[in-house]
Image (tube, rainbow, N blue to C red; front, side, top):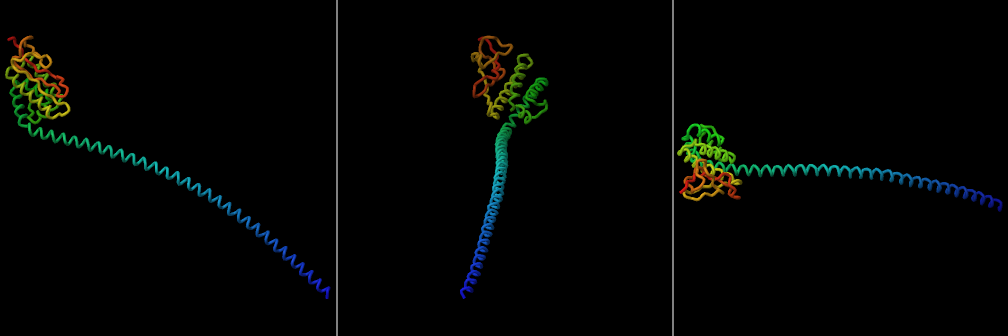
Length: 254
Protein backbone atom coordinates (compact mmCIF):
# COMPACT_ATOMS: atom_id res chain seq x y z
CA UNK A 1 0.00 0.00 0.00
CA UNK A 2 2.76 2.32 0.92
CA UNK A 3 4.44 1.50 -2.34
CA UNK A 4 1.41 2.52 -4.42
CA UNK A 5 1.08 5.74 -2.53
CA UNK A 6 4.74 6.60 -3.21
CA UNK A 7 4.29 5.83 -6.90
CA UNK A 8 1.24 8.05 -7.06
CA UNK A 9 3.09 10.88 -5.29
CA UNK A 10 5.99 10.56 -7.77
CA UNK A 11 3.62 10.71 -10.72
CA UNK A 12 1.83 13.71 -9.26
CA UNK A 13 5.18 15.38 -8.57
CA UNK A 14 6.33 14.79 -12.12
CA UNK A 15 3.05 16.08 -13.48
CA UNK A 16 3.28 19.14 -11.23
CA UNK A 17 6.90 19.81 -12.35
CA UNK A 18 5.92 19.44 -15.99
CA UNK A 19 2.99 21.77 -15.46
CA UNK A 20 5.17 24.36 -13.69
CA UNK A 21 7.74 24.17 -16.51
CA UNK A 22 5.00 24.65 -19.11
CA UNK A 23 3.62 27.64 -17.20
CA UNK A 24 7.11 29.10 -16.92
CA UNK A 25 7.68 28.71 -20.67
CA UNK A 26 4.31 30.27 -21.44
CA UNK A 27 5.05 33.18 -19.11
CA UNK A 28 8.46 33.71 -20.78
CA UNK A 29 6.82 33.54 -24.21
CA UNK A 30 4.20 36.05 -23.11
CA UNK A 31 6.91 38.38 -21.76
CA UNK A 32 8.81 38.16 -25.04
CA UNK A 33 5.59 38.85 -26.99
CA UNK A 34 4.79 41.82 -24.73
CA UNK A 35 8.30 43.18 -25.17
CA UNK A 36 8.06 42.83 -28.96
CA UNK A 37 4.64 44.45 -28.87
CA UNK A 38 5.97 47.36 -26.83
CA UNK A 39 8.92 47.75 -29.21
CA UNK A 40 6.61 47.70 -32.24
CA UNK A 41 4.34 50.29 -30.65
CA UNK A 42 7.32 52.50 -29.82
CA UNK A 43 8.64 52.14 -33.37
CA UNK A 44 5.25 53.00 -34.83
CA UNK A 45 4.92 55.99 -32.50
CA UNK A 46 8.37 57.24 -33.54
CA UNK A 47 7.63 56.71 -37.23
CA UNK A 48 4.29 58.46 -37.09
CA UNK A 49 5.74 61.14 -34.85
CA UNK A 50 8.25 62.01 -37.60
CA UNK A 51 5.47 62.00 -40.17
CA UNK A 52 3.35 64.29 -38.02
CA UNK A 53 6.30 66.63 -37.41
CA UNK A 54 7.00 66.69 -41.16
CA UNK A 55 3.37 67.46 -41.87
CA UNK A 56 3.45 70.28 -39.31
CA UNK A 57 6.61 71.74 -40.85
CA UNK A 58 5.16 71.44 -44.35
CA UNK A 59 1.91 73.06 -43.20
CA UNK A 60 3.82 75.86 -41.48
CA UNK A 61 5.90 76.54 -44.61
CA UNK A 62 2.78 76.47 -46.77
CA UNK A 63 0.99 78.88 -44.45
CA UNK A 64 3.97 81.24 -44.41
CA UNK A 65 4.12 81.19 -48.21
CA UNK A 66 0.38 81.78 -48.44
CA UNK A 67 0.55 84.63 -45.91
CA UNK A 68 3.38 86.28 -47.84
CA UNK A 69 1.45 85.92 -51.10
CA UNK A 70 -1.66 87.43 -49.54
CA UNK A 71 0.34 90.31 -48.06
CA UNK A 72 1.86 91.03 -51.48
CA UNK A 73 -1.56 91.00 -53.11
CA UNK A 74 -2.92 93.27 -50.38
CA UNK A 75 -0.06 95.72 -50.87
CA UNK A 76 -0.69 95.77 -54.64
CA UNK A 77 -4.41 96.37 -54.11
CA UNK A 78 -3.69 99.14 -51.60
CA UNK A 79 -1.35 100.80 -54.10
CA UNK A 80 -4.04 100.51 -56.78
CA UNK A 81 -6.50 102.11 -54.39
CA UNK A 82 -4.10 104.98 -53.67
CA UNK A 83 -3.51 105.46 -57.40
CA UNK A 84 -7.24 105.53 -58.02
CA UNK A 85 -7.69 108.09 -55.25
CA UNK A 86 -4.95 110.24 -56.77
CA UNK A 87 -6.53 109.95 -60.21
CA UNK A 88 -9.93 110.74 -58.74
CA UNK A 89 -8.54 113.84 -57.03
CA UNK A 90 -6.91 114.95 -60.29
CA UNK A 91 -10.14 114.37 -62.21
CA UNK A 92 -12.10 116.25 -59.54
CA UNK A 93 -9.64 119.17 -59.71
CA UNK A 94 -9.74 119.17 -63.51
CA UNK A 95 -13.53 119.08 -63.50
CA UNK A 96 -13.72 122.00 -61.10
CA UNK A 97 -11.23 123.96 -63.18
CA UNK A 98 -13.16 123.12 -66.36
CA UNK A 99 -16.38 124.27 -64.71
CA UNK A 100 -14.70 127.50 -63.65
CA UNK A 101 -13.29 128.03 -67.14
CA UNK A 102 -16.65 127.32 -68.77
CA UNK A 103 -18.36 129.76 -66.44
CA UNK A 104 -15.66 132.33 -67.18
CA UNK A 105 -15.97 131.81 -70.94
CA UNK A 106 -19.74 132.17 -70.74
CA UNK A 107 -19.38 135.42 -68.81
CA UNK A 108 -16.65 136.89 -70.99
CA UNK A 109 -17.65 135.62 -74.43
CA UNK A 110 -19.26 138.87 -75.58
CA UNK A 111 -16.34 140.90 -74.22
CA UNK A 112 -13.97 138.64 -76.17
CA UNK A 113 -16.03 139.17 -79.33
CA UNK A 114 -15.69 142.93 -78.84
CA UNK A 115 -11.91 142.60 -78.34
CA UNK A 116 -11.64 140.45 -81.48
CA UNK A 117 -13.47 143.14 -83.47
CA UNK A 118 -11.12 145.79 -82.06
CA UNK A 119 -8.08 143.77 -83.11
CA UNK A 120 -9.50 143.41 -86.63
CA UNK A 121 -9.68 147.24 -86.82
CA UNK A 122 -5.89 147.36 -86.66
CA UNK A 123 -3.88 147.36 -89.88
CA UNK A 124 -3.62 143.93 -91.48
CA UNK A 125 0.01 143.45 -90.51
CA UNK A 126 -0.42 144.49 -86.89
CA UNK A 127 -3.76 142.73 -86.51
CA UNK A 128 -2.23 139.46 -87.73
CA UNK A 129 0.74 139.96 -85.39
CA UNK A 130 -1.46 140.53 -82.35
CA UNK A 131 -3.58 137.46 -83.13
CA UNK A 132 -0.46 135.36 -83.63
CA UNK A 133 0.99 136.57 -80.32
CA UNK A 134 -2.08 135.07 -78.64
CA UNK A 135 -1.65 131.81 -80.55
CA UNK A 136 -4.55 132.53 -82.92
CA UNK A 137 -5.17 132.83 -86.64
CA UNK A 138 -6.16 136.19 -88.20
CA UNK A 139 -9.74 135.04 -88.86
CA UNK A 140 -10.38 133.42 -85.48
CA UNK A 141 -13.50 134.55 -83.63
CA UNK A 142 -13.86 135.84 -80.07
CA UNK A 143 -14.13 132.41 -78.46
CA UNK A 144 -10.90 131.16 -80.02
CA UNK A 145 -9.21 134.43 -79.13
CA UNK A 146 -10.37 134.07 -75.53
CA UNK A 147 -8.88 130.57 -75.34
CA UNK A 148 -5.57 132.02 -76.53
CA UNK A 149 -5.68 135.05 -74.26
CA UNK A 150 -6.18 133.12 -71.01
CA UNK A 151 -2.95 131.17 -71.52
CA UNK A 152 -0.27 132.75 -69.37
CA UNK A 153 2.54 132.18 -71.89
CA UNK A 154 0.67 134.23 -74.52
CA UNK A 155 0.38 137.23 -72.23
CA UNK A 156 4.13 137.81 -72.29
CA UNK A 157 4.47 137.41 -76.09
CA UNK A 158 1.50 139.75 -76.71
CA UNK A 159 2.91 142.46 -74.43
CA UNK A 160 6.32 142.26 -76.12
CA UNK A 161 4.78 142.39 -79.61
CA UNK A 162 2.66 145.45 -78.84
CA UNK A 163 5.46 147.32 -77.04
CA UNK A 164 7.82 146.66 -79.99
CA UNK A 165 5.19 147.92 -82.43
CA UNK A 166 4.85 151.12 -80.40
CA UNK A 167 8.61 151.67 -80.00
CA UNK A 168 9.26 151.00 -83.68
CA UNK A 169 6.64 153.57 -84.73
CA UNK A 170 4.41 150.96 -86.43
CA UNK A 171 1.35 151.72 -84.28
CA UNK A 172 -0.85 154.73 -84.92
CA UNK A 173 -2.64 156.64 -82.15
CA UNK A 174 -5.73 154.52 -82.78
CA UNK A 175 -3.62 151.36 -82.67
CA UNK A 176 -2.17 152.36 -79.31
CA UNK A 177 -5.63 152.92 -77.84
CA UNK A 178 -6.69 149.49 -79.08
CA UNK A 179 -3.48 147.97 -77.67
CA UNK A 180 -4.26 149.38 -74.23
CA UNK A 181 -7.77 147.95 -74.25
CA UNK A 182 -6.63 144.56 -75.54
CA UNK A 183 -3.82 144.21 -72.99
CA UNK A 184 -6.05 145.39 -70.13
CA UNK A 185 -8.59 142.73 -71.08
CA UNK A 186 -5.87 140.06 -71.46
CA UNK A 187 -4.28 140.79 -68.07
CA UNK A 188 -7.64 140.64 -66.31
CA UNK A 189 -8.55 137.47 -68.21
CA UNK A 190 -5.42 135.56 -67.13
CA UNK A 191 -5.76 136.81 -63.56
CA UNK A 192 -9.40 135.72 -63.49
CA UNK A 193 -8.76 132.14 -64.65
CA UNK A 194 -5.35 131.20 -63.29
CA UNK A 195 -5.60 131.21 -59.49
CA UNK A 196 -1.95 130.15 -59.01
CA UNK A 197 -0.22 132.93 -60.95
CA UNK A 198 -2.80 135.72 -60.69
CA UNK A 199 -1.73 139.09 -62.05
CA UNK A 200 -2.76 142.63 -61.37
CA UNK A 201 -2.59 145.46 -63.85
CA UNK A 202 -0.17 148.40 -63.61
CA UNK A 203 -1.49 151.72 -64.85
CA UNK A 204 -0.37 155.34 -64.49
CA UNK A 205 -2.23 158.65 -64.50
CA UNK A 206 -1.30 161.64 -66.71
CA UNK A 207 0.67 164.12 -64.64
CA UNK A 208 2.03 161.40 -62.38
CA UNK A 209 5.75 161.32 -61.64
CA UNK A 210 7.86 158.61 -63.25
CA UNK A 211 8.32 155.46 -61.12
CA UNK A 212 11.12 153.25 -62.44
CA UNK A 213 9.86 150.37 -60.30
CA UNK A 214 6.65 149.94 -62.27
CA UNK A 215 7.04 152.15 -65.37
CA UNK A 216 9.13 152.02 -68.51
CA UNK A 217 9.80 154.83 -70.99
CA UNK A 218 8.73 154.45 -74.60
CA UNK A 219 11.41 154.88 -77.25
CA UNK A 220 10.29 158.41 -78.27
CA UNK A 221 9.70 159.54 -74.67
CA UNK A 222 11.80 162.22 -73.02
CA UNK A 223 14.03 160.98 -70.23
CA UNK A 224 12.68 163.42 -67.66
CA UNK A 225 9.24 164.80 -66.94
CA UNK A 226 5.85 163.54 -65.90
CA UNK A 227 3.58 160.97 -67.45
CA UNK A 228 1.80 162.40 -70.45
CA UNK A 229 0.26 159.16 -71.74
CA UNK A 230 0.14 155.47 -70.84
CA UNK A 231 0.88 153.62 -74.07
CA UNK A 232 0.55 150.09 -72.72
CA UNK A 233 -0.49 148.80 -69.28
CA UNK A 234 1.96 146.66 -67.36
CA UNK A 235 1.30 143.80 -64.96
CA UNK A 236 2.79 142.10 -61.91
CA UNK A 237 2.20 139.08 -59.66
CA UNK A 238 -0.40 139.65 -56.98
CA UNK A 239 1.36 137.69 -54.24
CA UNK A 240 4.96 138.83 -54.55
CA UNK A 241 4.34 142.13 -56.30
CA UNK A 242 7.11 141.27 -58.77
CA UNK A 243 6.73 143.26 -62.00
CA UNK A 244 6.54 141.13 -65.12
CA UNK A 245 6.30 144.07 -67.54
CA UNK A 246 6.13 147.73 -66.46
CA UNK A 247 3.55 150.14 -67.78
CA UNK A 248 4.92 151.68 -71.01
CA UNK A 249 4.59 155.47 -70.64
CA UNK A 250 5.38 158.64 -72.59
CA UNK A 251 7.07 161.39 -70.53
CA UNK A 252 7.06 165.05 -71.33
CA UNK A 253 8.76 167.88 -69.51
CA UNK A 254 6.29 170.25 -67.87
